[in-house]
Image (cartoon, rainbow, N blue to C red):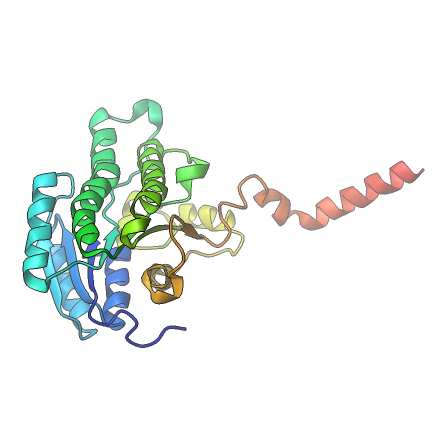
Length: 280
């Protein structure tokens, strides 16, 4: 649906861009003409990710960065501008997550996720956003999860952080619209990556249990999620800001009615039986 070089010569930063969804978003942006900057705390992830993204023919800059440290973020932004002259797109994708009951969650686990997801997204948005304000244009895309508004067992730390980023998305969209800056978000459902398998659904049984609760009965592909991330920063979405697109196969809509959908025939039989009884 997109023109081949819809992001021609735009400079796009993707935090956590060396692996998983971040890398796939970077690949899609590179494929459509963007110059790519990926950052991560892991040098190994950066090197592997950089070589894969470069296969799309893009210029790629990799940078070791801890988004929890605002001074590091400031220096990083300066280095990007020194190399490319500007920053057009920021994707706040860096995250941390693991399943843990709220009453047992170590305080360091709470702080770590809040620092990466909420604080890190704000530091990057504020520091890079100032440069976008100066150039009177720019786009910020935040990566959320549906439990930011539904809640989810074992995700108290991540859900609270993502809910904060959702509020930040909408607030900045209003505050910065006058500077020509659009701020949007995507909320993917489950997609199967090595990191997600390790932390969230390490067994086949757990994957099947999650899939049963998704109306489309499957996980998303990384490409499907990245295509939505491409759309929101493209000219086709030029009048969209403050929005969050959910890409979860109807998963969050199925909450509470998944069993009904599975037993629909039985439900219809019970309904018809009740109707006949009332008619008598």
